[in-house]
Length: 159
Image (tube, helix red, strand yellow):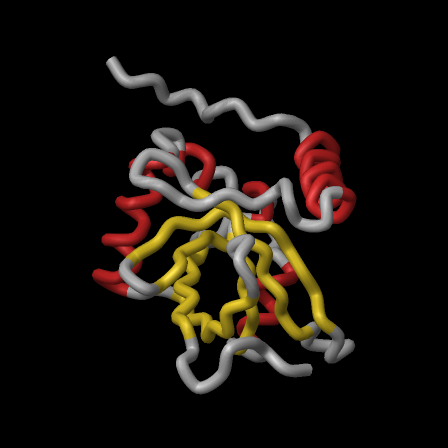
């Protein structure tokens, strides 16, 4: 019989502290630690730089991702808290962004996966996280699957 209990999720303060420590580790090591590539069995981490929808200033976040052909796929989950993450709100206002996988910036354009594309990419995330449905059920809204497509017209985002 399958368990109907929600998967364990640390308290919100702990999740936020983990993000702070991760960003600090990246900064202190000048990018030598904190990012790792995705593989068949493990999601990777990337540094996403968006343009603030209100300030117009660069904003960065370190996110999990996996590769889908030339595209990078992440989820707008905000640590499974209900509000949408700010980086996703910024991308909705201006889809152009830059990602760094540890080997320099790549210009990308973002969109939310829909329909069959979303279903396929969600199923791929379940390969990395068997409790994905349980975590997603904690949110009152659907968790967006975000596709970052490389932009061939320029190597990196300009202000």
